[in-house]
Length: 286
Image (cartoon, rainbow, N blue to C red; front, side):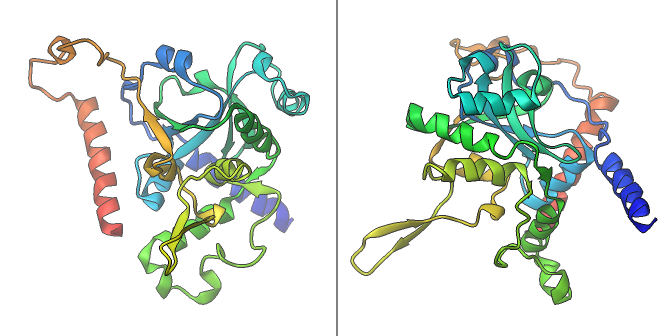
């Protein structure tokens, strides 16, 4: 009986967190061009539209709330093990561009890239990664398919990043640094992708040390500490943007369709107010 009550309460909480935040704004991304240009092992950063997205933005102090790993089209994947794993979680057309991601309420899944057509997104491309390692990164990511979303890790990250966590009772503190604290059957999006790149020793934001002989050494960070913004900040990833309105033509900005009325609509004001609230929330954390 108690388990059923807990399950009911959990399902209710997840339902609330996955409710749309009612902030409507046109995506600034040229999706069709992004689909044409995106490559396997690119990391897709997403500014989510749900209530849980706003929570994650505040916790991670970033406008990005989610990450997904682009794996390409099913018919382009050569490794039979990788293809078989994806086919266990995806039964759509073989020419559909796909990502692997970890989502609250769904776990680690395969999702068509077109799901994010109306979202604000950005591509982070690992610079200089070899074709062989691209395949290994994707294969490693498929090993997480079917795992549940690790809500405990998200809460631990909040305790770690928000300053007032030090005043909480010790039993409530983050377990991010405890030995074997992570549930081997659960994962969050950024840790899953960071683990995939760590499998080929491709750096995201490694710890860099210098000894007395001025020799540099890289050390891997705790994979549970990674957040979406780390791929944005990493000097080892190239930031690629495909704006809705082109930027390649000379004087393109003179052709932009600016509204000359100078009036901010009610819907636009709601969008601005929501982002102002987030900005204030971020400042209060710093």
